[in-house]
Amino acid sequence: MTPTGKKLMELYHALLNHLGPQHWWPAKTPTETIIGAILVQHAAWKNVERAIDSLRGQRLLDFRAIDRLDESALAGTIRSVGTAKVKARRLKAFAHWLDETYQFDPDFMTRTPLSTLRESLLSISGIGPETADCILLYACGKPTFVVDAYTHRVMVRHRLAAPDWGYDELKELFESNLPADVDLFNEYHALLVAVGKKHCRKSALCTDCPLEHFDHDSDTM
Image: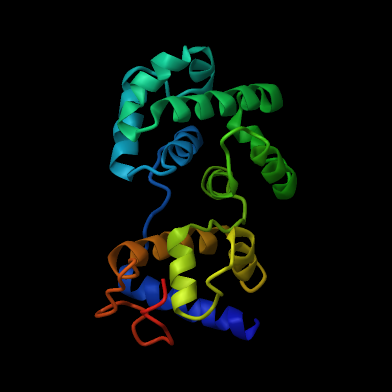
């Protein structure tokens, strides 16, 4: 393992030992995971849960049903997430893609090679790299690392990434220095979100942080 890989694993174990397993993604089925990944863009998870409960109550946790439903009716059902019209359009775009490509069978997606599937997901209107990687990792069990704002902040503050690094550079940091392991990528991303919410905020709260004793710069970002 590279020196950077060893440092990344040291951070991982420090987080895991302090915070414990995060049990991500909080969903019952791959379909629910995908819907959650689309709805959580720029939304609080509690509001996503409300939207998913509304979809479940109307028997709409199914992409065939979403594809058939009028866009405005779908937006009304998921209004708790904010920008509901935009999110409804994205759900319907995904549903149409799933019909055209996999005949509405999310399980069939898992048999597609990672790079091919990722490229196809990124072709869907409204599906960016983070959402695509969430779907790949959490719904399809593909070894791809999910990057978000917390990942960027933690890596920059602990001097493992430059402030101007974008999504692809941060993704490469993990994927080129760690084993391509679904469980590891799953737990690592979840732990970074957990420490980001509690400690690595815009104004860092380093006291009692699991990473407090690692080389860091609390003034960055």
